[in-house]
Structures are given as C-alpha cells and as structure tokens.
Image (cartoon, rainbow, N blue to C red; front, side):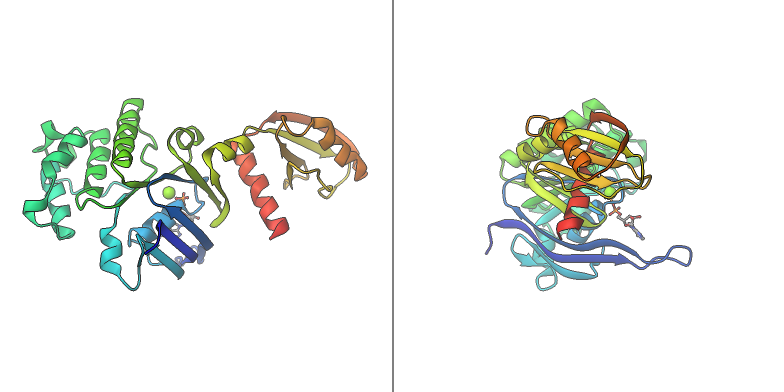
Length: 313
Ligand code: ADP
Ligand code: MG
C-alpha cells in the first residue's frame, strides 16, 4: 500500500481526432503523485489537459499509455476498487432532466453498487442544501442547484478521493462559498480533494499544493506558498532593435522570446533588481528599443516556466 491518493506515471493521451481535426496529443507524459489527505490543485490555462487527466482518473476517457494508481489500486489491474475509491464532479453537467435530486442520488448509488441500507441520500441532500428540492425534476433546478447535485452524485459511494473539475467556473459568489465550505468540511473529515481551476485566487485560498500543467505537460509542482512566491512577480518586456536571442540570465529570472520578437522576463522584485535584468540584456549586446514592466499574470508565469522547462529538459 502506498501513502499516495493518486499516482500517475508517464500518462499520455492522444485524442484520435476527426476528419476535420487531426489527432490531438492532450497529455505528453505526466508524472504526478498526490498525497492522501490534502486539497490539491491542478492549475492551468484552458486546453492544458486538466479535464483529460480528471476524466482518465474517473474512467471516462481511456489513456493512450501510462500508469494510474488510485488509492493504491492500479486502474488496469483493479478497475473496480480504483473506481470505488474516487468520486468525480465533472466539468460538464450530465444530469437526467426527468430525475429528481433524490432519484439521481439513488440511481448513482445503484450504479456504484451501494446497497439501499447503506445509502446516505438524506445526508447528502442535506449537505448540498437540496432537501427542499429532493422531489423536483432536475430540469426545474437552477444552474447552481444542478452543480450542487453533481457534487452530491460524486459522494454517493463515500469515496476516499473527491475530484472537482472547475467546480466554480461561471457560478455566483454564494454558490462558490457554499461549494468551498462543503469541500473544506469533507477534507476535514479525511477526504482527499483534487480540484482543477484556472482561477489563481481560488487555488490560493483552497489548496495545500498545486501542480501547474500547460500543453499537456507538468510545468511545476509545489506548495501553494512557494508557488505564490514565484507568481508574486514582475514581468519586463524588452523590444530589441534587431532580432535577438534570449541572453544568459541571472538566477531568479525566467525568460522567453515572444512570437513578435519581444523578450519577456519574469522575476521577483524582492530577489532580483530590474537593473540585473537590464544588465544581462546589455551584456548580450542587445540594443533596447523599448522597455516596460508590468505585474506578472499567471499566463506570463506559465509561459516563462514552460520555456524554462524546454531549455533545461
Ligand atoms: P482543460 O481541461 O485543461 O481545459 P482538456 O483536457 O479539456 O483541457 O483539453 C486538452 C486538449 O485536448 C485541448 O486541446 C482540447 O481541445 C483537446 N481535447 C479535449 N477533449 C477532446 C476530444 N474528445 N477530442 C479531441 N480533442 C480533445
Ligand atoms: Mg477542463
């Protein structure tokens, strides 16, 4: 037995594609171990591959290659046990409009083989605040209520791991707070939580550790505190007089060359003075036509980290 909730090794996924679109390599060999008991964030821009990872964990998408262990069970060797260990709230709502919340939860429990005497339908309805709506058709529920019901469906078999795929994309503050309160409560009761988001503040508030993925590859994985340190950064954009390659950079500066030829440097102002970045550029003999600095956003940090990963790996 392992101490990890999830172990992903060399995970690859290539979607076959259609006549119009060719094959799409969505995951390019992901290695990731997620310890038990934490709230873990999978962060990355749209199209990074977050849902592909989640859907493979959930058994909804077949991986192309690699290994997935869920709560110590290899997905290919022990599919039943690995599936029983994880509950997934998907990004796309998949509710039957003619089921009531109570029926949805009962049907889902049946699919997971939970005997009627062991079902916790009433507790779950209470947790997600849908006791009053237990008998209403799903199609009459508000968007927020449907989201809550999706959370409830992920919990029917009392999984050790709960995975939430963009649970708060496009939801109002009230529902967001309720979802987070629920997630914290479940985590305090011992459930391992994995969530994906492209909202940095959300990851900051919720997660103990974060993995950033981009273009189907792991960019970095760190504690939230360390990562925010890196993201609490400045970006310097330098437009060179003539096309220029990236100069050698002092430690603590990450750089990439934009398609339009501008050189983009990300650094922490507390660790690296702007002058050190400029000096590196001058030392490389690059004449500067224009320079400006701006607060780094997550996108810049992604790009810099990705460029760094390519340069060294
Ligand atoms: P994220 O959840 O991080 O936004 P996804 O995992 O949904 O990213 O998608 C990763 C990449 O795989 C994207 O380029 C997306 O267009 C592509 N993709 C996702 N699902 C499919 C599919 N069923 N067929 C073809 N390509 C897909
Ligand atoms: Mg997604």
